Image (cartoon, rainbow, N blue to C red):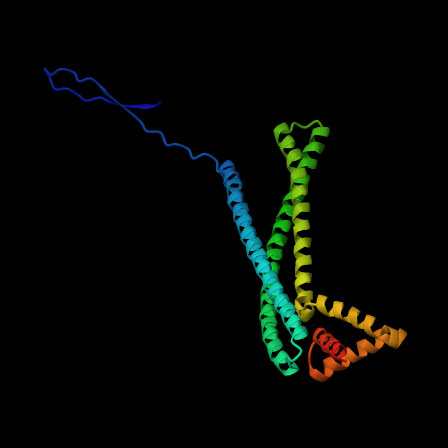
Length: 267
């Protein structure tokens, strides 16, 4: 290390002072930032992926919770329909006017379910957008690493020195990215199917929430009751009568079927 020497003179008769040697401070050179920048970029990727995972996880829970709640509401309406149909069947004096007032309440519940379905569709669309963003990120990363790997392989074939550890890392990474890309694509397709299912439910809200087992059973009973008399015309005539009652009274076909059944039982 370079040193600076300071010599102090002495007066006559005085002792000679020892020279004072002071070190000269050296300025430290700043290291190159290239390596640090690369390391910083690598370090920032992990938090971004963790944030992506968190958003997707929350969106999945939100959408699935909404869907489960929706199914419960649909089953509740179906149960109300089942009980109402059974009551209309068993209570011979229950008027159509009273029935229609009760059915209006179930229609109001259906409107609430329609809103819930629309909300559910929005939630799944948000989830789909997050999956799509992940797919794009993985796809870009996959192509980049495939190019890097192919480049290293070609350089190796040309006899150029390469990083073997980097090549091995890429050979392990590329298949994992392909697997993750396929998994994300499958998730997107599942979400698309769920959205289509919800749209179909929204467009056919009555069919989604109606109860049909009782009316089917009673129709079969009516066929057996009048088949000997009507022959081949039994089913067409019964269906025509049910449709006529449904239109005239302004009630669903399930209740019109019960209405006709009750008439036949009284006859």
